[in-house]
Length: 261
Image 1 (cartoon, rainbow, N blue to C red):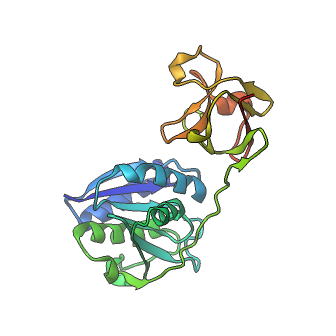
Image 2 (tube, rainbow, N blue to C red):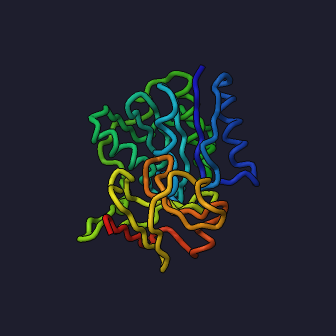
């Protein structure tokens, strides 16, 4: 039985996700649908790319991922499908697959990408505002039902890529930045935790944290803490609270790391 995931910025209020599922099940009734998230901030392609890259590796071979964060819907932006390793992806060509593609390239994992051109695998009536329903959902369903990627359109080798900020080495450690703020108000940075060796101090928005902790529950409620998150990156958090609210933090804010200080 096939598995298909959905990731969107649609929320759950207006039925957009529900109608996508209806389209999918009409084409492939036996597919299992897993919701990765529908709470991506509107039009935040970078947040969508981060979420997709963190979750997709935990799904099995043959999974079809349909990702729709699509501020360019109805424009000349391409719609694409990709086979990356043993999983399949359907998305607008706006950088949503950047991190997955780059990780596959680093690991020499095969990548195939096509531009969606074969309207036989779309709904009959295509609107200019809801390609999630009209194009991406039916294409994902057909892939889950077993059609081959090559049937969907012409191969391409120039997908749009986002430029993600990278941490920079300094004389005393690292300059990182907040890349993602989760539901709990935890601040994920772009610094891999493997770089945190020896004594570590973290400075963020006028506050200083003098050590790393292993988990949230090892600190008193309200303490500002630094730790490695479940994805292996430096995270700033408030135990039983919200670092986002406590610090007034937002994505892009500087985080300084001082090693052996």
